[in-house]
Length: 312
Ligand code: RIB
Ligand code: CA
Image 1 (cartoon, helix red, strand yellow):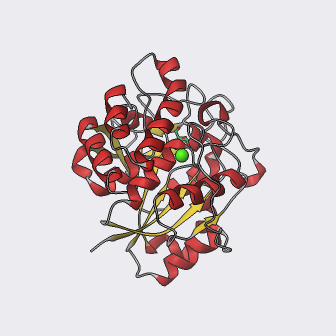
Image 2: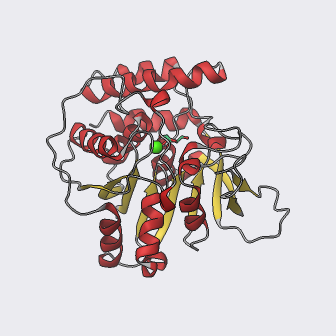
Image 3: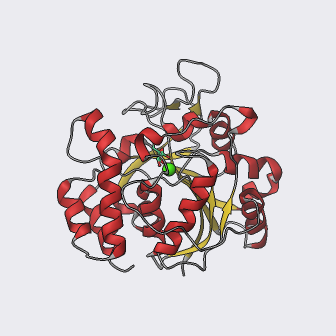
């Protein structure tokens, strides 16, 4: 029985690889893709999501555009310095012909959760949490209907990547993150602490390029473009492949270890805005609101990713 999911995303090369992994995995029923502004502005993330689903041969999956700015009029911060000017730099692909679904992403999320059996749909946010928070604001009745939110975001032992304290997805819309983490919906969180172990080393990229397919060639090129910023910063072979960790956890949770923790979001301080305060050592006595992933079997992760990409 396949697991129905909605992926909310701001492609972004790593988002694109997560979308391909999900598209290639029959264990997952892709109900739809919702685009959010993040790595690049919304017009580009909505284009990129359609381009990737077309590359995956999955024109059957609706792609909806959502929020173009964070909650409460906070100015959008983007990451072209990491992802390039269109968000999928590294390889030239034809413009998508897959039309954008006319429904707003938030309406699509609410409508789908109301239509599908309660407790069966998993939301997989890979970017800022704006669309998810807006859906919960618009329709509080959906919260108990969500099976789980499995998200990439935050950091604790690894600190931040857009500021010393904050990871990009949370930093862009801290209020949205606060509202998601206080929603009561079960959460699995893939922070930098786990994604920094999933490194796109030269050997791993070579195995993906050796697939010899359009998908393998594109993914290898995206990885080589995307990793250069982090290789420079961290001085290591390969960059962290963040977003596919979300999909891999759904497919093979045994590849990961973690623990249930209380997680709170800094929404006021200029210095630490967007920091995820993860009570890893349970010193606050506050109830756990997230299962926080800490380690991944990186070889197993890349073996799974490569095997699934070979199917496209
Ligand atoms: O900090 C990494 C996250 O920010 C990833 O989701 C990446 O795609 C960017 O959105
Ligand atoms: Ca992302």
